Length: 287
Image (cartoon, rainbow, N blue to C red):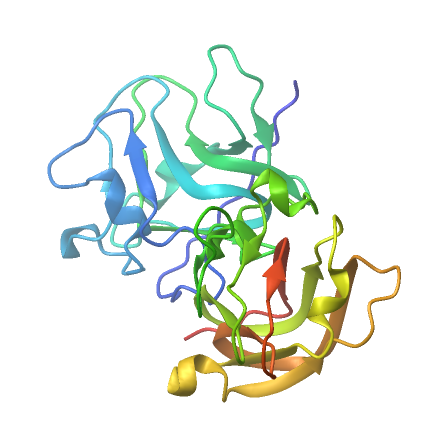
């Protein structure tokens, strides 16, 4: 299995961009020197001075590594590394960025090449007497909703938790436990909180197919930063029309900046069921 060694630029003051799914995720490394804990590399602080306490740092060793566990399996499209800037910037030369889905013995790691599916991201520095220092690692995905925090207006007692709509599983049979489902109520809604404030350019909705696919007709997609009225007063970007035979529906619109994406279904005696919601961004902004 061939591996691609990526050239890592020295970035002295890059702030974490919206859509960075690595912030706060669990990180480990092969060893730790002083206070250079693995978690420092995903704390959202991109200060490149190690002595400011926001960089990871291994001991001198053979083949040091650092690993990130994302909240779920993502299509990883890019990784940004903030290198140490106060000294020793050349230490990182030759480091490899790898992504994989499962932690298995003797697994074949994948280099980040175009889009790579994975839940784990490794930074691996081959060689003897090496030190690996990372001041920030940012990971970006095309669908930034996978594994994000989701809530809804109500939930059926047995199935239909809101996070089922962002679990990465697009099974359209609600009975198999991968679709959200509200109670029958007035104006049901569902909301996902993105990893940061993002420029959202499209939303894909996978509708229920085992029955009742027409229930979603008239649902509205709202995007913004406010939680007023549960987020349902944010900017309206699309309305779901008759679904006919379409189960997967993609709505593209002018880039809309926001942290919250709401699906709101106006009316009395309504049920909102979503088998998957995917959220995509265009060019990322710096905060």
